[in-house]
Length: 312
Length: 147
Figure 1 (tube, each protein chain N blue to C red):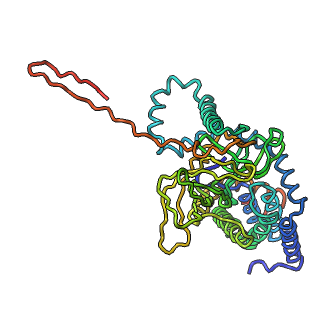
Figure 2: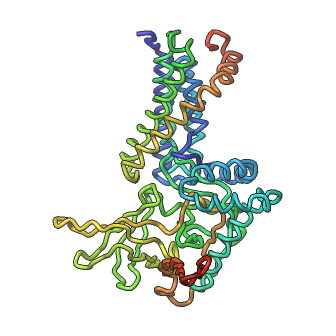
Figure 3: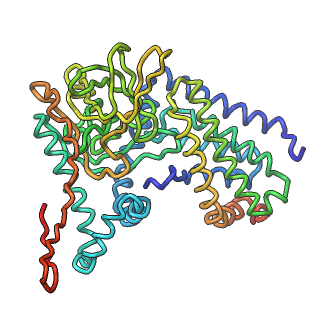
């Protein structure tokens, strides 16, 4: 044994552990001082987060491009062809255009449903060291954002406002393991509970075991009383596989969220829901296959060279 | 900024390296301070003191293993290995304590992926900052612990 410790050392450890257990007990009992400490810390750190987000944005864009290399090969090939033309404005315009696209998507979605929204930029993504999925946005109570409000992207549900500060808010993502939402299947109106799994995949548990669910079914939010925390009709995701174990008490299915949480730049907080439930109006249209062009060659005997004619 | 596979936590890495160079008492105090800092983060899902309790134990353990053994404290590679193991152990302890407190932890596959990512990034980052931390530690506590 290299170190046997002494009474002073043991006393220090005991004091620290007892202090920690005291803190845990106070927090679990809901003492306001503890939550006030966290709120104060976040309020003080918001300007630092904004500055940090601005500083690391070029590196973040670079890393994002690298990690999505395989999935966006076609897009990269197209961009390379246009590289000379865009060279001067690429760095700044790329970020701005992406955010504009996301903003248009959010406005289209909210406009179709009749939601009143507040737009916000994502200023930081929460660390996954604590195994949670969160992000911080630059809109807070001064913009009308309150706790337990639905957060959207152009594709659908992002999450819910967990804490709101004066100029920022912490959003719990739908992929967070602690996230739960009541969902219904578009069309059949079957209901269930969707839970996050820490990834872009969620698990839907149907409440009625006699109903059927199919791969490709779209899921929408059922909505809560007064639209908080969830407004009704928000697209959540699509069923990717169904688990039909004969002995299972309830039927479950894997769901892929419409929103890609790792590429969020602009989101919207729903501050007021629609006057009427939009029902299935927000279900994204299914992609249509692009027809392949066919080429017919007419060969005329005696002609010098055949002339190709392209028809669709 | 979110790195692939979850990235790393700089405060956690610095606290464990600092503990590896310190006495067990200083290690426990370091864990207490770093734990309070991590608990104050709004992204921490647990109650105040969750990370603190974990880091007191882990930093004390790391300091206990390294104290008086120059094979560990005198060799940067051993300090990096000790730090990587300490980071992963602290996250596992955090998960277990979280389960005991009734928290949701998500899918096992995702947890293993995040733990492996954390170990990878810690092993990458630790050698880059160990010299700076060692220099600061030596200036505060004397040159005996400097690598």
